[in-house]
Figure: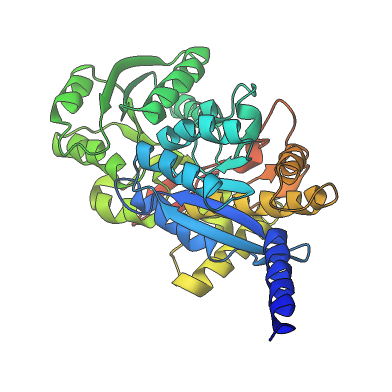
Length: 381
């Protein structure tokens, strides 16, 4: 009996040592709430990520923030303090991701966001030095829209966007791009993600008689202004942002979103891209993995944002392991350094080349113009 006690103690110590060697990945996504159509494919994608990297076991702790900023912050604190994670993936939407920055920077835990706004990573200051992201910046997509508008002869644009950081960020960047090309913004309206009516905003836009309307929303709530515009007889072109690139938006929008134009990640139309496109092969690989688990036609760009976050993490971990062991402050710092030095990594929707001043690192290969035709996505060169 006396012999068994030291053996049991040794086994417990060995178990504790092995657990320390595991890499714990904290994930917070908006799997419910207004952004659920974005967060669900992200959550599904986490389940497809590697369970071992460079010989180390990876543990994913996935929490739902219900599209709520306070919940995202609470989740982040819990993942860091209770689960002792080495890296945070999330959140799904811009307001949540912005709110998480103070938490991860204070704890010195690297974070890879799956939300769009450039404000998440710009400028790379003392706090944002810990933060990276995978979706294209607003300015990159704004320029794609403006270029298409100019080619189409559009002179004036009405703008309606979310009344949060997503909508504000888009208005700021789109205004810059529009001014540079001589486009006039004749109306500027806002609405909440949870609103059920935007009639007042739409009537103001239509009174301004713009040639086109840009809706800066994401997920299914972005369909509301477009459906209202159609109901009121608006006949101009309608543009959306890359925040609507999923099947749920097509389902909710129905016939009212036919003809919609938007910039999107190449993964949305990967099969239609020329073989020379540098993102086609990795995008098709992600599509194959996701559809094998969830069925044909289920892929969205939002799941690809999560996939690319996982790929960045997988590229950085082997480098970090050369400097420290998982579960330590030294490892988290080394992982941050390694993420900042990822060069030329081909993801599902872009080529990532990070630097000390650019924690996104995508070039224009990460965007294509798409048109909604017959209830599906059509690549528009």
